[in-house]
Length: 136
Image (cartoon, rainbow, N blue to C red; front, top):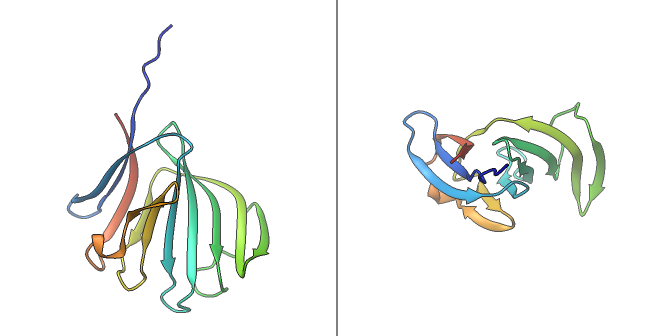
């Protein structure tokens, strides 16, 4: 039996009016990192997501430099300290989409496999953003 490879596209768009900011072909197991500076502590946060063939994300790791507002206090996986970061690994949380309110001041940047995909000024300040995977 022959199975056609189904293409996947990462789409970042405005939650309210649907404006597309990014549309990028991706593959299962590609890594997406969402990197930002916390609004209160002004320290770096990162979340690592793996793209799944079913069009979902798996949150695999969260890392941050200080405990404070917004830090999850109960997560699965293991917790360690590496290079000045609290690292929560092996989270394996399935997410159908990833949402945030974009802040240029937070220097939010999205990376795909280690390369910049979205820079802070690519999206207007305080816009609600949705990151999804569409099957082609």
